[in-house]
Length: 436
Length: 162
Image 1 (cartoon, helix red, strand yellow):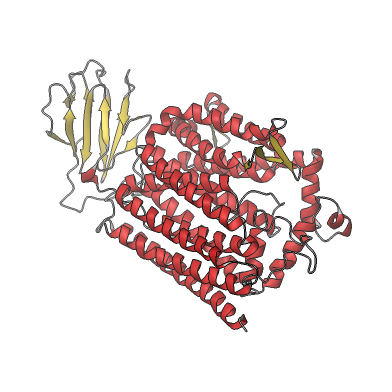
Image 2 (cartoon, rainbow over the protein chains, first blue to last red; image 1 turned 180 degrees about the horizontal axis):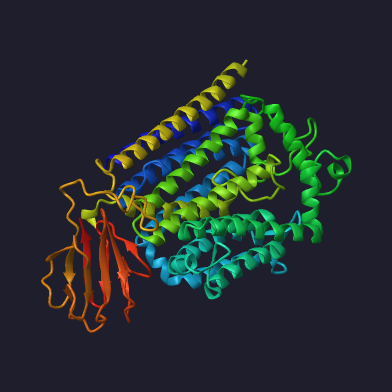
């Protein structure tokens, strides 16, 4: 039971962070915000405590740091969204947290023996593919910035890739558990082991699917997210670095070919390379957003300008200086407000979360659990890389949500399912042998 | 007027965040060291072992008195549940004339073997008809065994302990 007490203590910093953040934002913008809005912070803390008690009862051996790290990420997000749009978005986001934690609890109860998921792997895979393709259905999909990443239902916009990523990881873990030995074996040709074609086939098909997704969804970032998880799971399953190297080369070649043949991907790359080019800056859906995000981050300096100080609107008007500050560009607002230290702190939080995920994989006793924990951790890692790298202009920009931080319901729900699975793996792995 | 308070809260936010991160990182390091020393506390005894790739030197010498690799019968026709078989010498499992006889219609004559390499026990399927299962997964090629692993052949099931 000691692990759970650690977890409870680790929630104290999250409570302090939320209190300090909300108070600072409230003080800055007292003229625009009502006292009632402070309650969202209190609700959030109550929820964390409730979730802690739930974990204490259902998963007594799970890793004690995973949930507090998620709580810190979530409170980071809630404070920033409160600061960006305290009137409505913070309230909606707090509601999504309630639903997210309900789904979190439901996942833990339903999939207490998560290895049951393996029985449904082809169903899960089919469902994920359907989810990924939904945004292309005419009348349902939302086209934004050249990519199809969301669907629009009455009253709600939904991002299917967020759920699909969990499904794809479950499928890959289960599939590669069965086929890893076949993949690792094979004939040696020129010093390299070439797996038998019948086993390599499905992997090639997955590479093809990632490329197809690139064309169909029109988005390098999210296909990189899926493909990164695939390579990580394949590497852990087979211990062959050559798969990763060839996989990256194949992805690079495919992306290069598509970038030079699909105009809107090429436009993204031009925005990335030359954001301050006046022609691109003033073009519709051009580099305006990205260029202004660079200025906002630069203005943050080491310690930031303070909560609520980054300019989001052109002063005196309601024209956005940074479009989509609470979703795509939340990282640039964080850097502007809290500086290099705030941004680095956020990234270290992700890093520690991912390291706890890998730790759960190390301790797990069966291959499926190992591959699942590796896949779930990697998919978060690559997602953070894709969005933060995009905002910071390391790679071309893609609008995937920053996990647990960015505004958006489907992202929160899907990521809470992901954390629930990670905690389930961790609980089984850390359970003393006498209990099993 | 309120500006200094806001700056203070911002710095407080960053300080709390970093203290928390340092604390989690330190605990993670502590956790790793404890894992290397091999157990204690609430950690699992198979701390550094992975069922996918082994991390221990297979030729590690036997220096410890407490190393007693054995196969415990869970249920197998012709064997009393709970009986343990010594694995210090190579053991073949099967229906034929082998060290560990199985009265199991699904077992092949020479079904599987368990050999010791230093402190590591390796399970290998000997081309059986119905396969050998390690923790529910079919065995192809040599597989290192870890404490608590379950080996299933047909309807017979064993647990590995050391």
